[in-house]
Image (cartoon, rainbow, N blue to C red; front, side, top):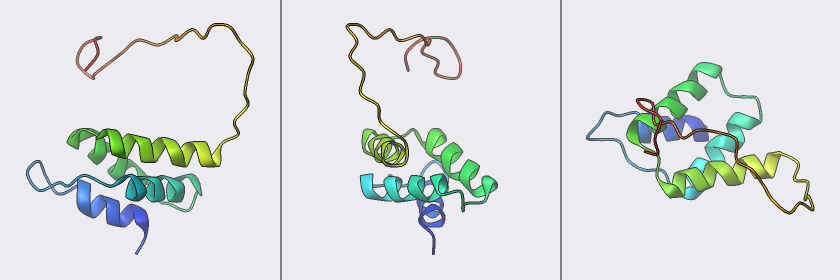
Length: 96
């Protein structure tokens, strides 16, 4: 079975039965998504279920590690980095 299917079984089981993914489970699921071999509907179900469950730091770290593995990293020599985004929790514009 695929990592995404396994992740869906854990996180998309309702408000009281959903379980957290380990760092490795979330990393493997995201690597599978980034490979382009996952049906877009399955991808959406997994990501929406994670969001509805409220992602853990471990799950987010696994997703980030997978993205960093698959994307190019280019170190830059800059003095300051400016963040140009607003926090948004889905209801109002403030940090969740």
